[in-house]
Length: 403
Image 1 (cartoon, rainbow, N blue to C red):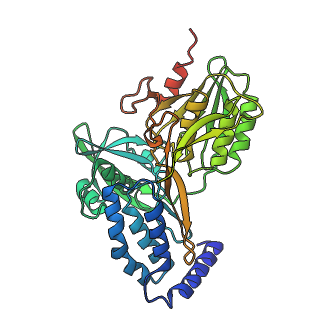
Image 2 (image 1 turned 30 degrees about the vertical axis):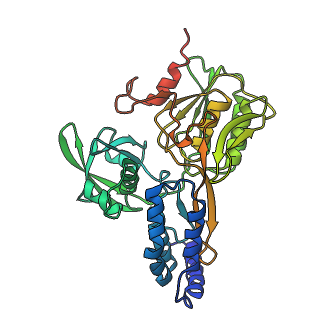
Image 3 (image 1 turned 30 degrees about the horizontal axis):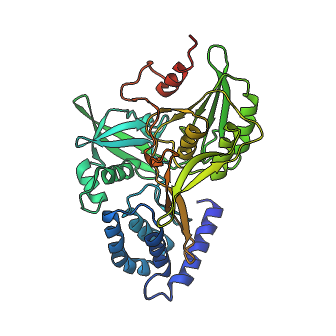
């Protein structure tokens, strides 16, 4: 453990001791978390509302008895899991879980009773181990997949959305160590060992730009949403340098974190000459509000294509939908991560944990839920056209073939 991490952990434990030692009753932090979500979560349905109301009595006691920050964070994570929502997250020094979808490298779907691999993140641990699109996962850590899903859902049955939420957490695997998957492929069953390594800081730059195409007259910009506040200024410079191209391909397939709304607005501003509606949001009990982006100092007017996949998440999804509205961009790829709504947060004062959750529903300007926003040109990774390589980029380039 690095010295600064050791010191941070020691300080957190000392602070927790001062908080927890006199506590013999309900945990104020737990109650603050529960009440904030109970009043402000925008996506309750009857099933999730019932689970949330039951979780208070079930976990309030364990939260009060937690003797360490990590133990308390574990109780909070167990409570938040009852919402079965990838956009509900826990942050802070004691948070333990993997960040989904950002640290996920297999995207599973529940299809006709089978856990099918729909996408594999290029160069991820699963890709290196040989897993690929189209395989079905039959066992994980030597447990039948159906049993593992039931256990993740607390023994209860669930909807397809609930099952896929559980699958994403199961295939994410441990933060470090060996993960064993049994997969079926074309009738054959094999055992695959995926060596999970602790996530390291990437040396990949936040933004990549270049000219592509036979005549080098197409602009290509790859943006890593969530890679920091510099993304907006880097994009501005890249688009200025590529302003005389006949079209732009904007690649949003590598979200490394939720991202910043300021970055989304800065990028959108480069594609409109007048104030333009780009999304709608709706808080419970309040009227819908249309968000408008203001024009920037210079505008890119050539056609725009946006590349997306299951790892286009958070502000990446907002940006893709916004570009479809503001720049009339074509969206090419697979469905995106499907994170729901606009985030609210509550800081738990004693533990310092931060709980983020969708406090508003988000919609496209046409009124469809943003989490369901589909690509205008969908690419089937199980049966791609164009041969090996990058089938999503291939389909985008085909749109600009010269007659």
